[in-house]
Amino acid sequence: MIETNHHESVLFNESIEGLNIKSDGVYVDTTLGRCGHTKGILKNLGNSGKVIGLDQDMDAINYARINLPDPRLTTIHCNFSKLQDNLSQLNLLGKVDGILMDLGISSPQIDNADRGFSFNKDGALDMRMDQTQTVTAASWLRDSNETEIANALYQYGEEKRSRVIASTIKEYQKNNDLNSTLELANLISTVVRPGKKKHPATRSFQAIRIVINDELKKLSEALDQSIGALSTN
Image (cartoon, rainbow, N blue to C red; front, side, top):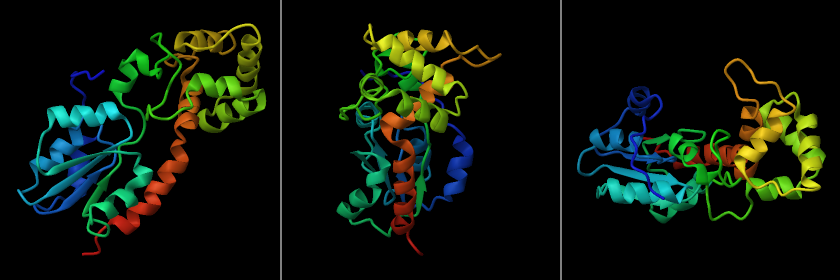
């Protein structure tokens, strides 16, 4: 599903200014999203400039192809951990003038209940940014043991109640399938007190999302590859 709601890019002006855009430069937006940053880059490029837009979410790629048909833009469906491979195929390795990474989850992903990222909307317990992946949040919670879940919640969400939450999840799964976001959020809410401005499930949902999408490993790989991708001129 492709929605057309307006999405405000984070730190837009600072990002565009920081790229120090040259009119004939080559730039990579590794998290294309709803094209906010890419539009800003294109606006500052001349006819010979190029933008390579990557995104692991096919919804974002389809959105760009429909809403931003610019000959200077090349869109590629991939995670930014595949940066080097894709630039090599385009003969652009070592020729890039700037790389942008807007990390984390996007508001369109949260707003779409079917994607399973929100603890405020009921949907399938999915959380895959790349929907071609096989492991979902539901399948990971089903197949992981209590210790694995507790460790993930603590490491990636800094959730102090991680062990209690993990125990509650596995106990619930003895007699029930855990397949929906509100089901999980409500379960967590039984053992975690709400904060003044934070839902009890906030940290746990963040941690599970990071695990499902292997976010930190892929970010590390992308940062390493960025060095070799950039031009030395």
